[in-house]
Image (tube, rainbow, N blue to C red):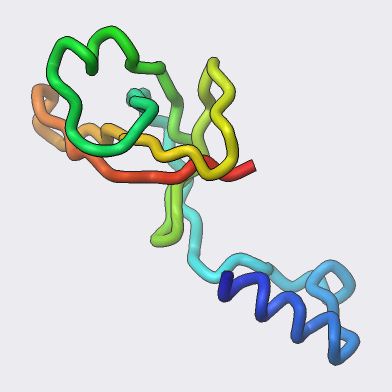
Length: 102
């Protein structure tokens, strides 16, 4: 939302980011090459549900505002997702609540 506001104000004063060559993102994106999984829906599902509904994903980059994923299944814009990000220990993962963006 804040990014759209900044973009709107730049266009209003005649300096669109595309014209100035300026980066439009609010947060620095860090490249990544990590395999993970996404689970449609929010909350913490049971272990059985997790195995059945998990979708494999590849993390392309991450920032404070989100993650860029490659997935084999389409999600509806606004759909809640549970994103599992691996920790340094191979047997552990952190779950993060996410929202699908177009």
